[in-house]
Image: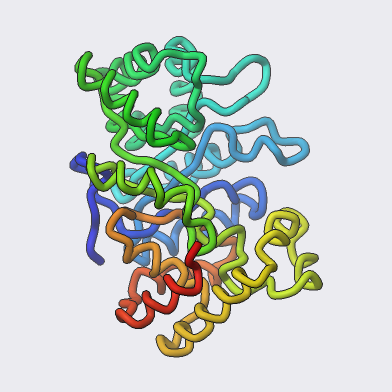
Length: 317
């Protein structure tokens, strides 16, 4: 499996990342372990999580996903087989939020403890904290890089203008630069990324590891009418907005390409992302080994020119 560098760093990853938001939310620890085992056995290595996962679940307080990953890592000599990406900045309660230096330096220790590791490969600003100067945030990351606790840094939910500001500050002060960006990006959510962020990332060599790659499961073909929304209480509300002429046209194109490729709509949707020159590794989740098979298959698909043209036309915005 051909690996790709995260930005301009020396960290190489397989072309698909596993989204750890499901750990401690949609699946329990035992199932999480079995999925992580098969994920690595399949030749994949990038696992994305965040300190806030999965605070939204009743009874959770955040850190559940990192804790499960940490327990899995502790079971054997697995740390050197995976690239761990986590995030800081979203509201953890009790005033724990944002990207101020003192908070980042405290939050990283909590993540390291939960992950049961000495270092984080990719540490990401989960949200753009406009109340904190980039000088302060990047200085915090510089400290962590010097200490060996973080290898590289990335950003999530930042627009192109703010990414440019961060780059200017980093270059001027000799501080770490954001090597990756985590935007929302899929066949059905194209415009916000492709208009400004994609040109910026291509120009500056920023790696893209987009989230909602399957649009909350819509692009798997699981939801084709409002009657299907009940299949997932957690995702049905978001998916409802895709049940329109354009959404159904995209599903039709996915069905056609999947049939040509003897594959599935989910695999094809991810393969389309993997084929984009700007994308390093789309993020996708699975709650069963069967779903994981579809993710792995996406890395093995080679879409033909006519396949990509059909998908591009159906998803045009």
